[in-house]
Length: 290
Image (cartoon, rainbow, N blue to C red):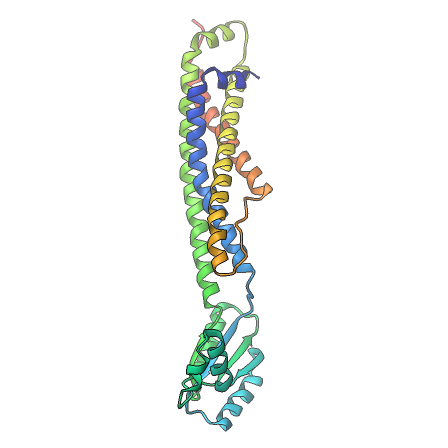
């Protein structure tokens, strides 16, 4: 109650401090939420490694059958799907609405192709398989269809590192803010602290309300960060729905989970407690009864 009373004694100063903490922590919390949403989207797609093999245009039917036979006996391949150039041209015309133009071609410009599913192997072995198949004389180009997933994973890893660095920097800022707030309180209450020591109050007894104050201020800042993140996600989600509707895609952003929200509150409260403890330990010993 004493910590809450001290927090309400200077409402403007407390509001500004809590707002600074909330705004600071809303940045890494928002980026973390965005990364979680990107990871959820990536998880909706198949992670089975697939490769598309495009044959040369002048490949004969005998050579195509030979390639199919070698693929079927390859140890690193589990399934094979053959797409003839006739079917590819037909699908191209249907998907683009240019069926009439596709039929007017004197010669089919599309090659025969195989879509193969590779065994669940590390990414470097997929690269080796891609390089091996690329050397076959009948194959014009080999495309690793899951390459986008590796790029996305690399981007997510970079994003997680950015969140970690921001969290560390802003944690130091929270410690500094709490340290200075508690220091000012100690200096303002110097006479009261001296009297308390004269009547037998221990340093632990005097320290405790300041620690509670720091934890309460940190938790309030974390709650403001959650509020900002939630409002920002809702605003973006509303606009994103309108955009995705134009592409006939049903997708919405997810809020931070209950576990993530509690972790943020506990983390900010712990930092507030730590900043208050550092400030009290640095200044309380200097105050002795006269």
